[in-house]
Image (cartoon, rainbow, N blue to C red; front, side):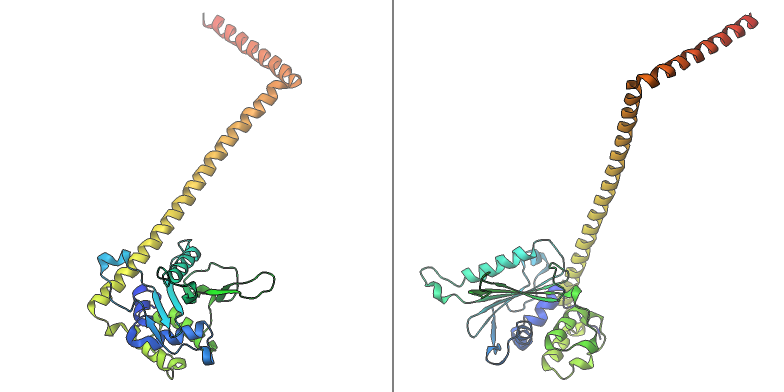
Length: 298
């Protein structure tokens, strides 16, 4: 059995962003945000349900997930495989945009609802050791979240190193699924009795995909591979250029040191005059030898 990699944009959207299987997204959101009891999300409406994108339009297609619960709270979920250096700013932009778009012209600000941003990253961006970090706007003095309409949660996959037997929570199981599903051949026993995971593994089974989905999936995978290779090539060339520039600087510095030492010698009268005298003697000796040889030859 071959499972798709949930980190692939298309696979992620197909698994978590399908209106027909939104119980998967609900389970994921409740586990990530630690919603329990009366705070648990019971239902969501997907603002951009899963559709197979066309390859020529893929550059303009954003395969994130946007949902709204019954309270009107907004949720943005994005999977990011490559570190482009601007993900924190992007998360702020998307969250602010979702917040502003709630308010038609002329309406009261009181209708604005909270926006949650969840970023799943295949790289590290923060110094915290935990693989999940929550970021809030906190009053520095009171430590109270007075401005509570924005909340950011980041999952850094490289920091998650648990084995199957170590999975303790539903959140652990979701993170393990996202990170490792493509390396599995069977549904692990740890997942068998949880309906949402059985459905998620079923959706990730590529033998059930149509030809168009497989083409887009492969296109995204190859495109990401090419981008990674291009980045590594650029880094390697930059290192090589840096080494060559360093060697050139070293050669120039060596020339300058030689010139400086020569000037120091010429400035040293006590050293220069004896050296000059020896050079004169040596020259006279060679000229004498040359005269003798010339006389003999004649």
